[in-house]
Length: 125
Image (cartoon, rainbow, N blue to C red):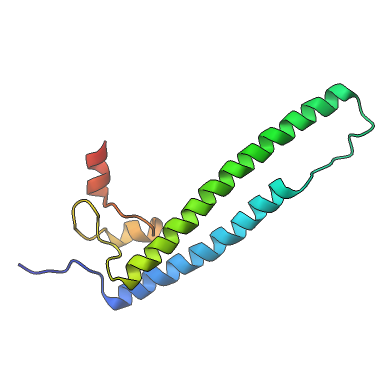
């Protein structure tokens, strides 16, 4: 039985490049999200009616909560990508953790932190 349960070093290097580019972009996006919810965002409503100010503060709180959730998701995405880099170093990258088969290169290019093949994802449903 032929064993091709790992990607070649060349393929792994290609995936590593894709992942490193995604990490760089994701970290820039995370900084934008963080700066959005760390700003005080004062739009000069000090002299407007108290009712308007209450609405704006509620909206600002919701916006900060949404940005916090986005930041948490972005941090998880970055962590998953960094874990994928570790799997590349260990030469286990691209191997489905359920079936043990190689995940298709097309899937890995779209979702480079994937640990499940389409076959395994479909079994979860």
